[in-house]
Figure 1 (cartoon, helix red, strand yellow):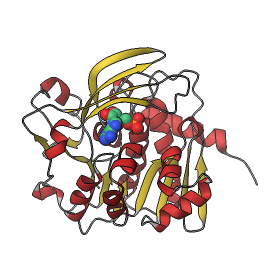
Figure 2: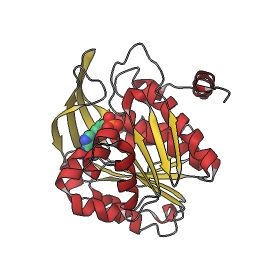
Figure 3: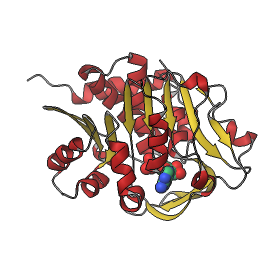
Length: 301
Ligand code: AMP
């Protein structure tokens, strides 16, 4: 089953203790789409400017990614620049330029309207909501956001949250959104805002899932070297949603496996700069790391 994503397609400039890169292809929807394409068909909804050429498009080609919903507008593509020092779990944003996203009004191609699994990746909540409203019969709609939108557009964000089934967010932003430090309490408060299911990403410490009375944890994969954490959260979401759409149903056992696939994919993303590692993954590498996770976490009660 296909999964649809709306979110940023960007040029990123990144500095980490390991090196730096200028204006490389990034964006939440990009990381999500490439990752989810290892599991299922992907439909992308985003906008790029006239500085986005065949070179960038190559990242999507040869994969099951439908770019009919990738609109081209005149102007500059979204740009983000960030830096990591010390704590590799958190980027310091140096600059965000919405550019063509500032006036984007997403119109879904007709053939996208039957999509069952939808992910509203990080972008203006108003755009997330516009896409959500065009898919009234979607079976599972997930949403991610970040401090930038929690602080700037809280009203729009709460409208979008009221219309989704699942939220995927990092721990710091979950605390900010809920206005409380204790994570289980913050989770309960966020679930009251709309989503029945909540996934809180905790960087290298893994992720946890809250649904009704169930709590499930997956650790982060223990890597000796992290070169560039950019996109890890979107990659996590791509693995999570990609696996669910391949499985076809968001049952609790599938949600638990999806959490592990999300962690597996994120662990690959950080091994190299930008999209480099994700672009050359093989299905066998993904399955091997999934089974390693199983071995590392299995115990008899
Ligand atoms: P992550 O490291 O998973 O949080 O995601 C980083 C990616 O999100 C980068 O590729 C950025 O281009 C993109 N990004 C950063 N800030 C924003 C924002 N305010 N809205 C949408 N996308 C963003």
